[in-house]
Image (cartoon, rainbow, N blue to C red):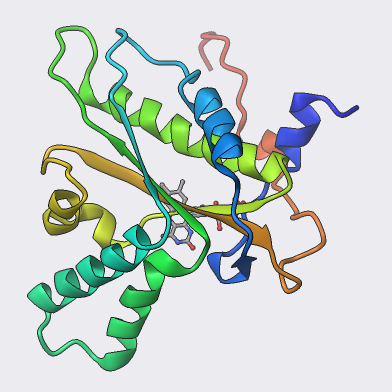
Amino acid sequence: MTTLVERLQRRESTSAKHLTDPGPTDDELAEVLRAAVAVPEHGAIRPWRFLVLREPGQRRLSEVFVADLLSQNPDAPEEEIAKRREGPVRAPLLLVVAASPRVHPKVPEVEQVVSAGLCAYVIQACFHDMGYGAVWVTGKPAYSDRVKAALGLEPADHIVGFVHVGTRGPEAGARPKTRPDPDGFVTEWTGADG
Ligand SMILES: Cc1cc2nc3c(=O)[nH]c(=O)nc-3n(C[C@H](O)[C@H](O)[C@H](O)COP(=O)(O)O)c2cc1C
């Protein structure tokens, strides 16, 4: 039996292009979302929003992504349009993870967005742990008011990520990724001068 620490050390993403059917069941998704809402969160604001898209929601979002691109660049090249269209339909399941921050005297917006980011991490990590592949992405549509509106979000909301989930296809990498040495990011701070 591996520990949670060991499993988190081995967590990794699977590129959306390597995610195939079948996607997780509704019960598996419900389990993962129960883990997501167990993230640390300040002030009992619960600013998280999870939108679950399977077909046909993914197809509709594709059209929203394309309309968003064309509204900014009516002459966008065909490859760019195709890339936008493919974005939401790459894997059997797409979760939009968003924060709907509230003005709160003690909890700045950044803390609420961070908490939603933790949800995205937990969702990605849990699906990996269950044997699925998953990846957290953003891109320009995540910052578009038009996309937010189509998803029923307000301009002040933040899409912290799109999490694609599916079964890892044969082309998905088999070897665990090399991770950096944490010592490169660590300094012991003692407060002593010098
Ligand atoms: C907020 C956020 C946004 C991201 N957006 C993208 C993205 O748009 N495209 C992408 O390829 N990776 C994106 N990534 C990185 C992937 O989720 C993933 O971490 C990266 O491919 C490294 O793989 P690993 O998780 O196995 O280390 C994003 C990560 C974060 C935290």
